Structure formats: C-alpha cells, structure tokens
Length: 481
Image: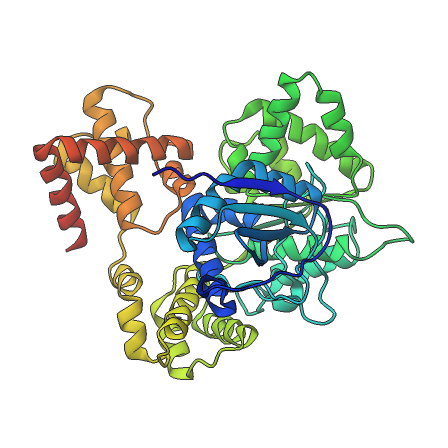
C-alpha cells in the first residue's frame, strides 16, 4: 500500500501541540523521532546527514501532523525539497497517526530535541554559540558540538589545535596563512575546521562580523561546474573572493579535477593578496598530494602546515571520558579503558562505539559493562581483532586471478582486468573500515562513484552466478583467516 503524505512548510515560531492517543505519549514520540533520525543517518550517509539533517528538531505531533523545525528558511526549504518525502515515510512507519509533516523555521517551544540513537546531539551550554544561520551557498551547516571547548587535546593533535586557535583569534596573521590541517580519517580535522568557523562567525573583528565561506572541496567543484553551465562564473568568482575567510575541507577531492584546481588557485591567490585568511584540510600534507598542480601544492605549503597524528591510548580514553560527561552518562572507567585499547583506528569509530553501547543500555535498561560491550560491539571488536589492509586484498585477488598487482591501479578496462579490480574494491568495502574515497585512492585515484559501481556490480553477480559467488566467498575466507 502506498504512502500518501502531505508535506508543508511554514514560517516562524515554536508550536504548542496537543497529545492524546497512545501514539502521542511524550516518551514514545521521543523514541520514534530518535529512530527516524537513525534511519535517516543510515539512509543518506554520515556526511550528508551531518550537513543537512543534523539540525532538524522535532517540535511535536498535533493530530495527524508532525512538526519539525530548522534554524533557517534556506535549510527548511532545502530539507523539505530534498528529504521531505523520506522523513514523512519514516514517520508514517513509526506512527500510524502521521499523515502530514510540516517544516517550520525557528526552535521548538519548551521541547528539547530528541536524542540521536547513533550520536546524541548535545544542546549548546551556556556561553556556547547558538547554531549559525549558514549562507545559502557559501556556508555548510556547522555542527554545534564541534567547538574548541569540546575538542580533546593530546600530544597527537596539540600543535594543530594551537594553530587553529591562533587563526580563529587573529586571522591572516603572517606565517599562518594559509593554515593547512592534515591527517587520517576521524582524527579531528573537521572538528577543528568547524571550531574555527564557529569562532570567526560569532565574533566581530574591527567592529564588523567576519564573513566566512566554509565548504567541502566537492561542493566547491560542483558550484564551479554549475557556474560554468549557467554562465555565471563572474558572480561565482566575486562571491568567493569577497569573503574574509575561505575554508575548504577535504582538498584531496580536487585531485584530477584540473579546471577546478585552476579556479581554486586563482581564488587562493586573490584572497591571500587581499590579506584574507585561507584554511584547508586534507588527508595528506601538501607535498604528498600527488595529482595537484605543482604551483598549487607550493602555495599550500607556504603558510602553516599542521598534522594530526594517530591517537594514543591516553587521548582515546580522554575523548571517551569527555564524550560520556557531555552526554550525562556514567560509564565505568574499566569500560572506557577497554574501548580505548580495542578501538584504535580513529576517533569517529571510537565515539560511535560508545554511542551505540550507551544507546543499547538505555533502550534495554541495562548497565554498561565490559560484557555488554562484548555483546553489543561484537562486529566492531571483531574487525579490530584482525586488521585487513587494502594492499593485502589486492595482492590476494591478483594471485587468485593471475594478474599483476599494477593492474589494480591501471586504466585498462579489459574484462579479465576490470572484474578482479571490482572484486578487490568490493572486498575492500566489506572487510575494511575505509571510506569509498579512500578505497578509490588505492585503485589509481579512482572516484568514489567508481567504487560504488564496483560494489553494486559484484553484489549483482554474486546473486546471479553461483560459481562467481563461491569465488568471492573463498577470497573473503582466505583474507579473514
């Protein structure tokens, strides 16, 4: 049976909503909203969820109408257009009363946002800035948890933290422009980027607010392409070159995009020459970003370059302890120590494990213990017991199909080469915690969409061809044992 839901947008203000039926119980509504958010996060992915959906808050249920709130009109209209039907569908599956979803701007009246099952959202504490209303094109949504106050400092990241603080307090200082932050996945680059943007956006400099443009490298590329298509490149150039601070996250995504690199290079020069601040993040240092033009790589390294190293046990323990305290949850020190020793890949996975453990304990009214951690996090712990590298997967697949290891990164598309390459990408997605872009970089800097296609194609072939499925399963067992 199809879902017939009406989705509306509305203007300002909190709402006073009535509750009447069993489906309308306050605690049940909060749990339903938490599940809707968790499903949204799983459906759209972490990056997209944080960018657009993290700021959606539940205001209440009036009759058969759910009201959700967003901080700005732009976000309200965008979320309604791009995700309205999905949100409505998930709500209808959770609550039979729901027939409509209304999107409003503002904050819910006297109603805290429901917790996120995957990652609880903490309301800003006293003295912490409220959510900044992002500019439509130039400012990605900022996560209100990612401030300097919530960043846990340790030996691996203290230099990067100090540099970020310096730029936030005195942008365009000699020696700190540009500021280039680099490090592996989940080590805190994006947190520091958001913290700088928060600080600059909420504090006036010289009697006027600082204009900040913060976006991912992918967003910069898409905006540039759209400007070319719509013949509005002059407007695009003027808009970005008029800001006080330009912040670009994940610069490595510009590798191989020559025209976009050219535009970024000229924007970079125009801003630096005008005394404006630039902040960049990437997964590698400028000198190691092969695929970038030499002139751009040289300019990126002419300011302050700060790396975030892999975390130590002490830093991981401190991060877990701070996370638990901010969430208002008591977690025994032995459990924190257990998680800090077992999950060593990155902070994001570490915090995700804690959130999952705490959510399970709350839902089932159980204590947080090491035994519970073993039970709830068995898949995560198993993955960390046996580390499988992409290089190991490539080597095993090449041996199995009798091809050279260099073919994994080559441009050849012959079937006897392309199919094993797709199998290796599929196994990398199944057996490692690497992101799609990370996997693509191990296969000749291929785009993440190529990896997605490979995973999809291998999944189809496994369902259609028993012999092929047996081949893939054999490779998987060999790698896991």
